[in-house]
Image (cartoon, rainbow, N blue to C red):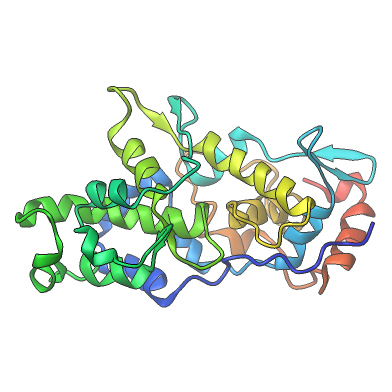
Length: 286
C-alpha cells in the first residue's frame, strides 16, 4: 500500500501563540504547567512531518500499535505523562464531540457578540488581544461579561491554557481554537465534582483516533502530533551520548528535545521514513 500523501498538521503555530508565553509571568506559566505540562515550550519544536506520516502508514488500529518490521510499538499513558510531567491519576477527561459557543463564552467570560460569525472555533488573535497583554482588560472592558480586573486575571490563565491546548494538543485544520477546548481545560483546572482530573488519557486517545482517521484517508492529523513526534524521535533518533535512563520527575522533555535527538539525517519524504523505520535493527531502537 502506498504511503499516504501529506497530512496537514499544525506544526507552525500562529505568531500570537508563539508570543503569548512572553506576556505571562513565570509564576503564571508554572500554574498552567501543573495541568498542561510545559506546553509553552512546544513552540521550540519543529516537527518532521514525514516521520508522523510514516507512523500513520504503519498504524494498525486493531492492535492500537505501529507495526514496524516484525515489531509492534505504541505510545503509552506513562510515556505521555512522563513527557509532559503530568499525573495519570484522576478522572479521565472526555473531549466533547460538539462545540458550543455559548458554553465557551460563559466559561471564559466573553460576550457572544464578540464572536459573531464564528461557528466551531475562534481565531487566536481575538483571544490574544483581550487576554494576553496586561492592559487587555482595560482596552476591551466592554467585551467581557464581568467588570472585575481580579476575575479577568483568573480567566487570563484559563484562556492561555485553552489556547495552548487548542493549538498543540487538539488542533483544528483552520488553526482556530475549538470552542469545546474551553470545557476540557476548565474541568482540568477546577476538577469535576471535587475530584482531580487527568488530561493524559484524553491526549493519548486523541492521538490514536487521529492515526486511525488518517489511516482511513483523512488529510488532517487532529491529535497532538508534536507529542507523537517527540515520542518517535526519542525511540528512533536519540543521540548515542544520551543515557538510556533519564529522570522523569522534574525533567523537561520538551525544551531539551533538540539536545536528545539527532534529526539531521531523517529521511526527506514519508516513503523513505517508512523504509527507514522498517529496516531499523533492535539495537537502534530505544
